[in-house]
Image (cartoon, rainbow, N blue to C red; front, side, top):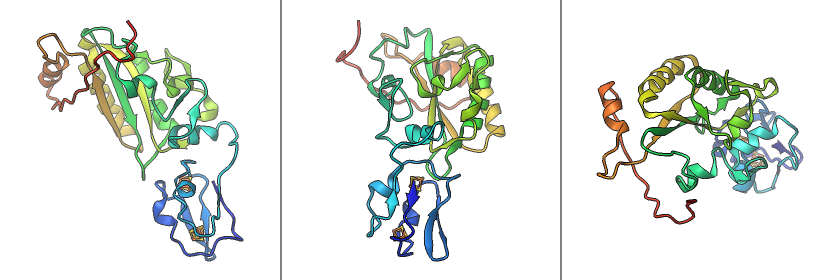
Length: 237
Ligand code: SF4
Ligand code: SF4
C-alpha cells in the first residue's frame, strides 16, 4: 500500500484503522512503514481517507504478494483457489473426509493476530518442529505451498523476510501423538516473537464422546470443546 502525499491532508484519521500500526506521521503527512505493512487493504477498503489518498498496488511483486494473500481476505491464493489463510476444509468442515476416523486428528496452528502479525521466519520454526514429529502437512494449505521439504519443515528462503497478519498451519496426526505435539508446540512458543493458538479437530464417537479430550486431560491440559455438525451437504462420499 502507498499514500499519495500530494493528496494527504495530514489529518491522521487513518492511523487507528491499520491493524499492523504501519501508518506513521512524518512532516505532517501520513506514510506507510513498508516493513510493517501486511498489504491487508483495510485502510483503502474502509475509505476513511476523505481525499482517497491510499493507493493499493495493482500487482504486488513476489514474494511481497504473500502478505496480501495471507492478510487480505479478498485475495485468492491461485494454487488452492481459496481466499484467506487456510483451506476450504477449514471453512466447510470435513467435506473431504480428511480427518479419516477417530484414530486421527487435525491440528490447526493459528499463528499471529492483528496488531501483532507474524513473520514467516517464526512460522518456519513451528513447521520445523512439526516436521520432526512426523506429522502429515495438509497439501492444499498455503503454508504447505511455501515449504521446500515436508521432511524438514523448511520454507523456501525467499519468503522468510515476509510478514503477514496471520496464517494457519494444518496437519494430520495419529490421536496417540497429540500430547507430544502439543508439548513441543508449547516449547517452541518460547522462541517465537508472536502468538499462536492450537485447534484440534477430532471426530466424535457414536456415543458422542470426544476421544482426544481424556488423552489431553491426562497430560494436564484444559480442553474447551466446540462443535460443528456436518449433515452431509457438499460432503464427498
Ligand atoms: S486519512 Fe488521508 S488525509 Fe488523513 S492522514 Fe490519512 S492519508 Fe492523510
Ligand atoms: S494495507 Fe493494511 S497493514 Fe498496510 S497500511 Fe493499510 S491497513 Fe495497514
